[in-house]
Image 1 (cartoon, rainbow, N blue to C red):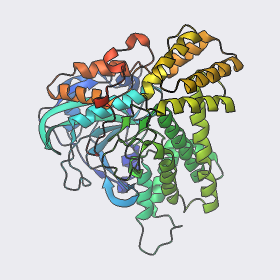
Image 2: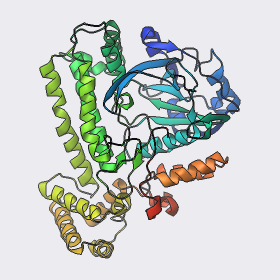
Image 3: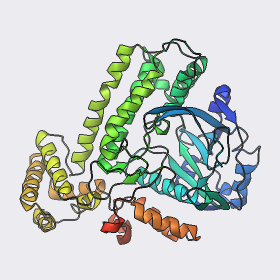
Image 4: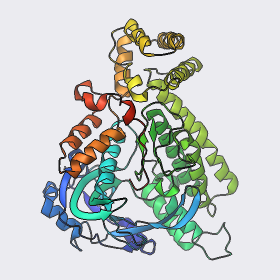
Length: 491
C-alpha cells in the first residue's frame, strides 16, 4: 500500500482564517490505544506508533505533523445564543492526509494545550472525555452512523482541574475536515457595522471558495455552486439525524459549532444512547430547558441549518435558500422510515409497516423498556412461535399480540422467508451499544492504569452484530440504578 501524502491546504490557502500554533508538550505522555485498522487505512508509517517517535512528531516544532499546525477560528449558536468568541481552544489541526485511496482526512489533536482561543483555560482534554469520545466514535462507526473517528489515545501524568483534579489526555482524531456550521457563521457575521447582510465579507468568500474546491468539487458544475453545496449539507445532516433517532443516540449539545458540514457526528460531549425508550430523554444535565433532548434533535437540526443558511445569503437568493431548507424534513422522514422498517427485516416502507413500527414503539414506551435489548430480542429465533413467546415479558399482552400479528403479516406480504428475516434482524440490531455506566467503569479502570476493560468493551462495540463477539456484561440491559445517567458539558 502506498503511504499517505501530507498536505496543508487549509493552513496554506486560508492563512488569515487560522492561527499558527504548536501543541504544548504534556507531562509523561504514554500511547495507550491505537486504532490499528484506521492507522493502516490512512497509510501512516507503522514506525510512528512507537511512543517516543510519536511524541517527537507531536511536540517537536518542525515535524511532519506540526510544521503547519493551526488553530481554527469559528463561532456558534450555543443553546440558541450567538457566541463569536469560540475557536480551537484545546485542539490543533495538525495536518491533512491524502490517503492511499485518495480520501482527504484531517489529523486533529484534541487536548493540545493553550491556543489564542482558549479563553484563559488550560487547553487540555481529560482522560474520561477522551475515552468516551474514542468509544463512542467507534461504536457509531460500526453501526453505520457517520462520525469523526479516534486514531490514538495518549494518557499523561499531568494534573488538570475541572470539578476536581483529573489527568490530562490527548486524542488524535480524524474527519474529512473540521469545518463547522459555526465556521461559516463566524466569517459571515464578522463584518463592518452597517454593512448589508447580503454582502459577503472577503474572508467568507475565501472560505466558500476553498470549501467548494476542496470538499464539494461536484457542486462546481451546478448553476449555483453555493446552493448545491448547501443542499448537500442539508441532505447529509437530515440523514445523520435520522440515523441518530433510529439508533436511540442523543448528541446532547447540538450547538452550531458542534455541527459538521460533512454530515458526521462531531464534537462528543455529554452524549448517550438512551437505555429505556424515552422519547424526551435528556442526556445533558446542563440542558435545563431540554433544548437538545432526544425528541428535539430533528427540529434542532433544521434550526441549525437555518443558522448556517444565513451565511449563504450573499451567494444564494432567499427563495432558493428556503426551498433548499424545505427539503430537510422529507429527507429525514424518508431516511428514518427506511431505516426503522429495516430494523424489522423489511424491504419496503408501506403504511402497514409503519403502523406496525408504531405499535412496537408504543409497547416499548408503556411501560418503558430497554430500547436496544428489546430489538436484539427479536434475533436468534427459529420460528414465529419462538418470537411470540416473548409476550410474557410485556405488560400489554393484547397490544403485543396485535403487533406480532401485524409484523408477521407484513413479512408475508413482502415475501420474506423466516431465515432471511432473522439474518437481516441480526445484521441491523446490535447486541452492544455504548452505555454510560459501562463507559464509567472503563474510565475508572483506566484512571488506575488498567486498559483491559477498555479493550474488551471496544472489541464488542467494534463487532456489534456478530453473536460470537458478544460479551454478556456489555450486552445485557442495565439494572435500574445504572439507567439514564446524565453528564455535564465538561464531560
